[in-house]
Length: 596
Ligand SMILES: *[C@@H]1O[C@H](CO)[C@@H](O)[C@H](O)[C@H]1NC(C)=O
Ligand SMILES: *[C@@H]1O[C@H](CO)[C@@H](O)[C@H](O)[C@H]1NC(C)=O
Ligand SMILES: *[C@@H]1O[C@H](CO)[C@@H](O)[C@H](O)[C@H]1NC(C)=O
Ligand SMILES: *[C@@H]1O[C@H](CO)[C@@H](O)[C@H](O)[C@H]1NC(C)=O
Ligand SMILES: *[C@@H]1O[C@H](CO)[C@@H](O)[C@H](O)[C@H]1NC(C)=O
Ligand SMILES: *[C@@H]1O[C@H](CO)[C@@H](O)[C@H](O)[C@H]1NC(C)=O
Ligand SMILES: *[C@@H]1O[C@H](CO)[C@@H](O)[C@H](O)[C@H]1NC(C)=O
Ligand SMILES: CC(=O)N[C@H]1CO[C@H](CO)[C@@H](O)[C@@H]1O
Ligand SMILES: [Ca+2]
Ligand SMILES: [Ca+2]
Image (cartoon, rainbow, N blue to C red; front, side, top):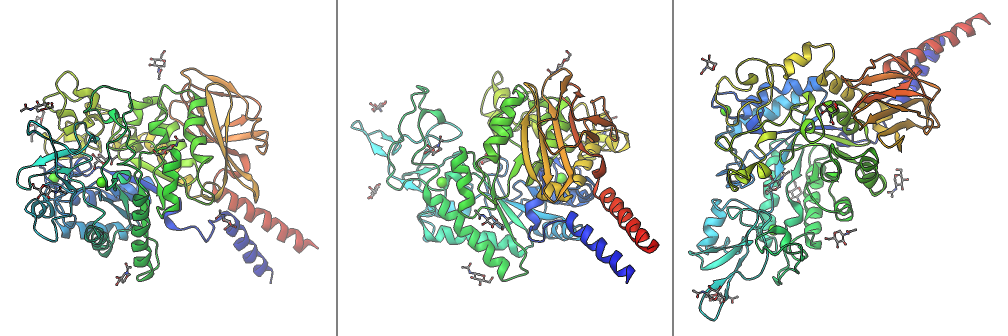
């Protein structure tokens, strides 16, 4: 009977520190973005591929990642590095075959990793057979794209039907001789927009989703959603007055080409496809994440229309290393937390293939602090490959430039446009090409710092960005991070902090403190009422003067330049510690009971 009490007590203890049974897998996931050209090359051609990814999946498990998202791997002429797709239901030979893909998914499943695909619905490549048939007016493809007659001027010249501008600059319309009409492209001219007013296009793209679901994928990251629908009466956009250059995307407002209500309705329809698939299979949710660079209200609206979440780009678009702690709090954290719908799952993104790396956009010293913010705020964390070891942008010469956005500029200006510096090969170790490829010659040069900055070295080191990252992903598994409330405070001009707390357990409090100044700051944590008088450093950024286990005072604490600290109540330094101290308490209670 006494054993029974102990067992029941243990279950109760574990019960309160374990995760709410209603939480679905994706709501607490740590998501990792793989840029496939740059992660791991299996065949020595200098370009990453699917067999390479499969061979390195153990790294994701070791890093504590739950799911990974792969940027486009579909057949593509690579006018926009894979975002120009010529077949939505196959794999580009550069990356491998459908068999390679199936093997990759099988291995991922066996390791407990979820697989998310990039879905690029707004446009296809101009080499897609749908477009080839559409140019030739072959049904049912004739209206798969958006064709318009031009405007004929008095002198006989034909001009585009309206003033719409492409995101990449220049008219959004390109004349096609074969069809004798203009087609719309919101991105590059090699990326004709699909016509979502056509029900056959809608059905065909739903088939694409099901095709990949049948191959075992767990969800989709949906590219460039706001551009899906355009006004079908094709009015001129109003001018912004910001520039006189009619080829600049900022020349016009985008009232008729972005954020249309029909776009949100389409997202809702895709959600229905996913939910229907789940209901008719194993009941495990398949997810949809929306990539939408939009203001807060238009972003949050995706939650109402079936997206599991729209990406939160606040830490990318609104702030950077030059921001003050107050700006980070207001424009990035509060802007999201104060506007996210009740019960919706938040998410945090600090990098992707279009942005400078964290070490370069912020500073190398801030890598750990930014990973703390990314991984310990409520909801999903999104990590771009290489950020777990603090990879840095690599300067790339004009001769070596690959990014079409860079090549489209000239030798004097390409550095303002190119995204190559943040797409260099993953730095696995100090061998040839950083262990990325057996070839000396890789599609982009390996960062010259790879001999010292690489995963193997960081695994060997006592203290490293990678070790901090692992500690953070481990901490994420605890209930205080998965379910706790969040409270963000500005401690002074340079220091921001946030707590995570569980109402059920005052010992659970965890506080992240980040110093955005390039000098040591003296702070007090009195703003966190529930924090005990002394706290223990649980995780410290590698350049801070503090180490894990050090006790600090709530009333006065020194934090070094650009550092990040994770502090906890001394009784709660890890779930296992909580459980074991609980067990001891219980055991003592039982012993006490025995005495009487
Ligand atoms: C577009 O032009 C073609 C001739 O090139 C003409 O047959 C067609 O009716 C025009 N369409 C519209 C909507 O004006
Ligand atoms: C026709 O008129 C337009 C607008 O006035 C002008 O820009 C264009 O150069 C003219 N084309 C020819 C061939 O004269
Ligand atoms: C729902 O799923 C079933 C089985 O997978 C499929 O046959 C059906 O077409 C789907 N319905 C919708 C509306 O997607
Ligand atoms: C957000 O964007 C939408 C669409 O562009 C616009 O109508 C709305 O006024 C914007 N909201 C704010 C607060 O700027
Ligand atoms: C949020 O979830 C709680 C608990 O499940 C529920 O009582 C509440 O109604 C939900 N709120 C909204 C706005 O859905
Ligand atoms: C790679 O470069 C190193 C140093 O430049 C050279 O010694 C080696 O032979 C090269 N290997 C190959 C495969 O080209
Ligand atoms: C911080 O200060 C040091 C020394 O003054 C300087 O070398 C470094 O560039 C500064 N870092 C930042 C991010 O301002
Ligand atoms: C971050 C991201 O995925 N950006 C992509 C958005 O869509 C355009 C067009 O497909 C791409 O060029 C960007 O790379
Ligand atoms: Ca390869
Ligand atoms: Ca579109």
